[in-house]
Image 1 (cartoon, protein in one colour):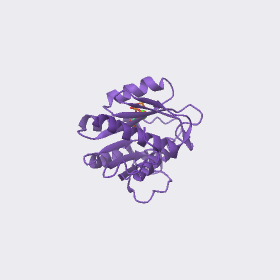
Image 2 (image 1 turned 90 degrees about the vertical axis):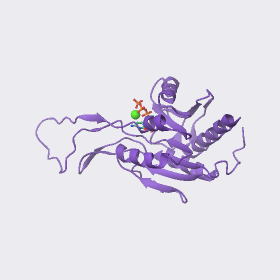
Image 3 (image 1 turned 180 degrees about the vertical axis):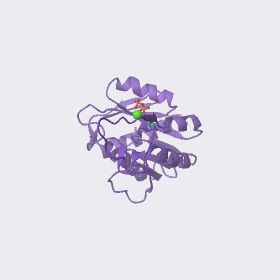
Length: 226
Ligand code: CTP
Ligand code: CA
């Protein structure tokens, strides 16, 4: 363990972080999205910067202020985010995927506003690309960190994502637990590293949780060096 006063433990490291939701367009006025505020990802970007990292934040639509000294790439859809991640991932040392990426998008999109009609409207949805799984397949030296947002069997599902997406570390949370999840100011996280090291945290502010995630990433890299 090292003190939280430690500074510059990521000096010279390039860290790419995704944050926020994605928006999947149907027509010029309508889209599908989710409740992600982006706060967790922005806090991780800040925590990485405080450790001296060179940070690129790939952000879906949020209302958050970008911290000074962080390069931001704004994206809207899952496809946009995928293209940005692919571009920055090659030169990254660490990639942290906290974004809540839509799993589905409307199969057909309309150039003009769709007028209302009598009766029901069914929107057919198709799968988006799994960004994290794709970079897990392509990774060389990058350390890859994913999130698992679960409402049951948290540890079991998180472990299965850790392996199926070829990650080095996964941050899991139970989105139904009071004090955790997408919208609030706090989170209750568990981190599981590929070498089996597991840490469970109490309810923390997203700022504090972000510092814990960055510390767990740093201690994982230290264990790998030995
Ligand atoms: N993720 C991604 N691209 C997607 C979907 C998810 O990169 N199209 C990433 C998220 O950013 C997160 C991790 O995969 O880091 C896990 O996301 P999650 O929604 O918990 O898991 P899924 O693999 O999408 O599975 P499911 O939603 O069915 O639980
Ligand atoms: Ca998902």
